[in-house]
Image (cartoon, rainbow, N blue to C red; front, side, top):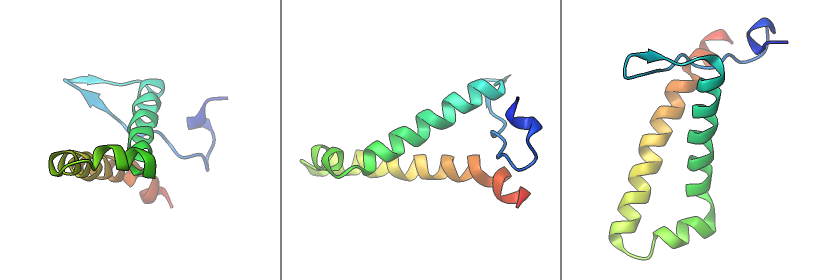
Length: 82
């Protein structure tokens, strides 16, 4: 059964890359990749490896900030349904 056929199942966000709309499966893959990278950057061991110097800390924080924004956009449609 397709996820869009389930009434209470969260829908994948609509995504377009360089004018090309992504399929549900492609959107799912992007969402999982973004979520996974965000979680990895929040892992204490990973964080320690980025925090060796000020530049690493800034890069890691920048990624976390941007990924957080993207995740917020991805979940907007889900929040609108509830």
